[in-house]
Length: 86
Ligand SMILES: [Zn+2]
Image 1 (cartoon, rainbow, N blue to C red):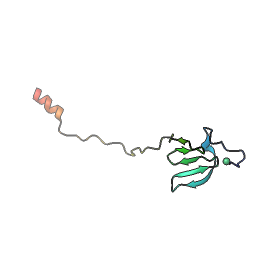
Image 2: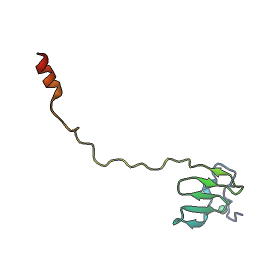
Image 3: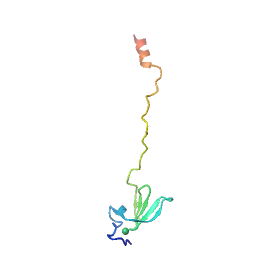
Image 4: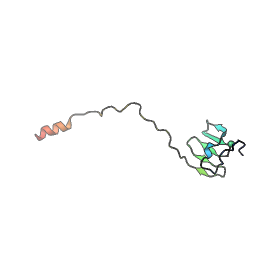
């Protein structure tokens, strides 16, 4: 299937994703590699033999760009308890 030189990793190898993309459908969220593997945007894969590889790379998580502010302060309950105790 692959005509590249040097040839790309075959679909049964762990580095199959290094093969070149021959058909890209970003609007549908998948690409086909020259070794027949279909790679989905969520890093899941469908191998030529029909085997499914579940997503295996963590997706980026959003990190708050601003640190959280101080917790909202209510009435100083601790102080009033101390005052009642005293
Ligand atoms: Zn190739």
